[in-house]
Amino acid sequence: MNVYDFDETIYDGDSTVDFYKYCLRRRPYIIFRFPFWTALRFVLDSRKKLQFKERFYRFLRAFDDIDSEVLRFWDGHEKNIKRWYLENHRPDDVVISASPEFLLRPVCKRLKIPVLMASVVDKKTGLYSGENCWGKEKVRRFYERFENGKIDSFYSDSYSDAPLAEIAEKAFIVSGEKITPWDKTES
Image 1 (cartoon, rainbow, N blue to C red):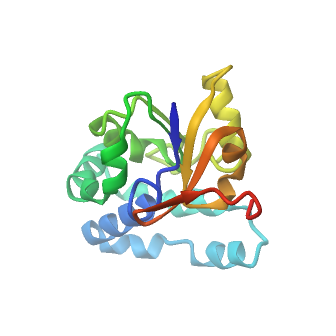
Image 2 (spheres, rainbow, N blue to C red):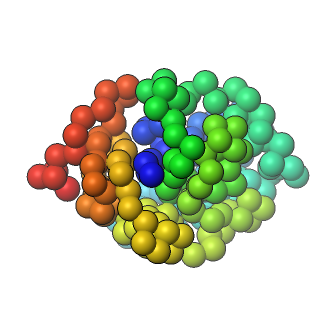
């Protein structure tokens, strides 16, 4: 099986940021819910990433039917799936992402990606159930789902995914449409 990160890997951009911008156009007042102070503290490294994200996702509360918003978002943004991925898609592909599961599930279904592991975020409150699906947490979730699983090839845009790259037979770094072998000295 091949395993992929999502944002900036098979999707051209950051789906969460793009979804927030989409929501901002639909409900401009949510800008007042942006946690500027928490973001500043996160940048200054005095707050955990998870705390910032939970506060950020409070904007979801402005929508009665977030599922419909997500579907409309993907109607306009599915075009951001990178060509190289569409040309190499396999029926046993796995996506492991830090983005919210509720946001990625519809596009993965459209792309016929059978397995999605992502951050479990309550779409009504913005609160996480469990850990942010990032770094070593991605490996933990992979083995939780595939006890003796073997990754043929792993693709990511970021060396922060080194834990997954280390367990893959082959790993690649993705920059736009360019794919190069993973440089283990960068990990």
